[in-house]
Amino acid sequence: MQTHFSPAQLADPGLAESEAILRKCVHCGFCTATCPTFVLLGDELDSPRGRIYLIKEMLENGRAADAETVTHIDRCLSCLSCMTTCPSGVNYMHLVDAARVHIEKSYSRPFGDRAVRMLLGLVLPFPWRFRIALRTAALATPLIPFLSRSGRSGERLAAMLRLAPIRLPWGSSFKPGTVRPEARPVARVALLGGCAQKVLRPSINDSAIRLLTRLGVEVVLPRSEGCCGALAHHLGEEREALKQARHDIDVWTAEIERGGLDAIIITASGCGTVIKDYGFLFRNDPAYAKKAARVAALAKDITEFLATLAPPEPVNKPGLTLAYHSACSMQHGQKITTLPIELLTKAGFTVRDVPEGHLCCGSAGTYNILQPEIATELRDRKVANILKTAPDGVATGNIGCITQISRGLDLPILHTVEWLDYAYGGPKPGGLA
Figure 1 (cartoon, rainbow, N blue to C red):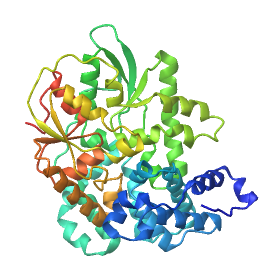
Figure 2: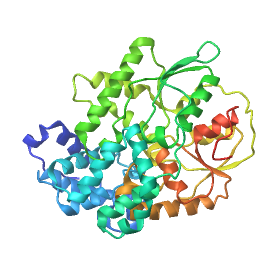
Figure 3: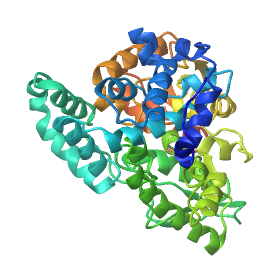
Figure 4: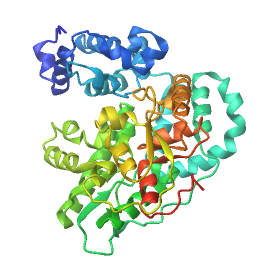
């Protein structure tokens, strides 16, 4: 792709990076075949190629974002399926992230839009605020019909209420600190507590801790750890995202220096994709570049780390058939594809791939709130494809996918590590009971 950035523009490291990404695009259009929004809407501007043209025109001319550009960029799920398909190696993730930052700096959103996005940023990254909000949401569910008919912002609030669980689980069985195995540890890891996951499904990390310690791993649960910055990052709130990321980098660096870490384990693949990208995000920050790269190198999805250990023979053999839903942040963001299936198969499960497995379920962080109509259509399509495999349950690696798909599927949908913990001697998951 030809670009026409001026030398003065290219002196900006961010614009120089975007220009290098743009020049890799050869207009082939392979990305359109695997883009969920193009598959549903059929609009070229709702495909990666179309969005690349919009971003190029906006950045190259140094102009503020307009309503049309914002509409089509906002509809992007950041599922990154286009990056898996692209034969030219276009890093669409970094390009669309830069576009979102530019939009938030240069575009004045309607008041209702700003209010909803601000609410998400103020609540979701903070577990105690999120818990209070969910309890309040349970009381507000009678308002859903009214909100659904009261404009765009009302529809988003209604979507938020629909996603809220009727009951909240108790918190984790494990407190911050160090959980040690019975025998001498074979490794020492930190486990990301998470934000929404900590409130919605604490059993995921509990399963990870039980399984890891059973396999001889010492697990550190840092006391002052916060949000990894993923939510603010995807909303284009660059300053807040980097602030949150710096805090966690400092927390993990202190733990590395205190007792060493063999890995930083992540059980939410959306968080994992962003944390593994810390080296890029802080590449121009002399105070954090080295520390961020170190943290990024240690970041591992739970399935990546489990694959380095030698599990015993399964204790529980339920003989279940599972549909494996590969979260977009897992398969496209982190390029982890067959590993979870291999682990589940070794644990005694029969695992089936879901048709159209490359297409997003519509969760995508806060997408199912900000773009509820498209998200619902994607969810229903995903559920229909899962049912084609006739499974007894579903395994996946991201809390967002679990929350989204469970709203349309009456089957147990558990994190991969919950299924594995059960197979290797853990308690029966609540979803199965």
